[in-house]
Image 1: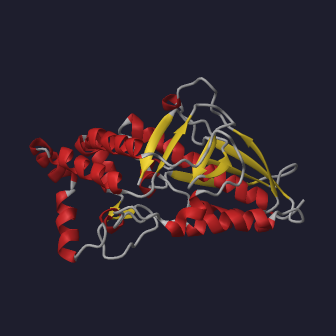
Image 2 (image 1 turned 30 degrees about the vertical axis):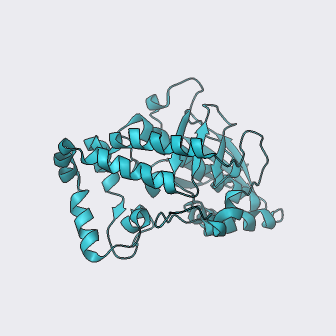
Length: 301
């Protein structure tokens, strides 16, 4: 039996890395509780939702929270196992029970047995490298040039699965995706509670000052102080509610659709509701997922 302190340090290191996993609006809706244990395990993790950081006013947003939590837990478990921690995983969620009815304080329980002499450092550094290279920058995505610096990350697979593939969309499907965004994105902007939740995660400072949420310039490109303050007022939930009556939400959705049409790369995620067999994609990097998540699809520019 190994002391719990080294394992606790290892867990903390892996949690910090797993936080780099993409999440909806970078809200990072997860929380992790660590418990020291006696034989036969060295420790236990309980992973669940942090309600204060969730965006769940709409069913589609609730789906995104589950996808975000699934990605985080998946990468965290893979990091732990690559450093020699054997994980025994369980969940209080019962297959067939609708996820909205889940009232458990945690959604995933991971019992750890630490074997420091059995690490797979190549696997650990591979995942760590991919996570550290991930970034979200949505400015100046115009023209036909590919985003070459990210291409090797986008097409990397750690575990092969025929259901997850890297595909190049033709012009027609690309345009259809843009039209889909133009048609439905306004629903997020017009829904008062949904937009109020989203607005909390938008940063209007000159440079990003938080590891949670996203900076307005990451969405719209470099902006002057005046433009940042203008958009801070314009996008305020109270202002949005008033201006929605004059078609602002539809105009914003159309603009977002145009950005989609001119984007050089984006990903579409779709998953089936299953337990212990779902696959999750991080920049088309595949990891085994241990959480049940509903069928859903999201488009990320």
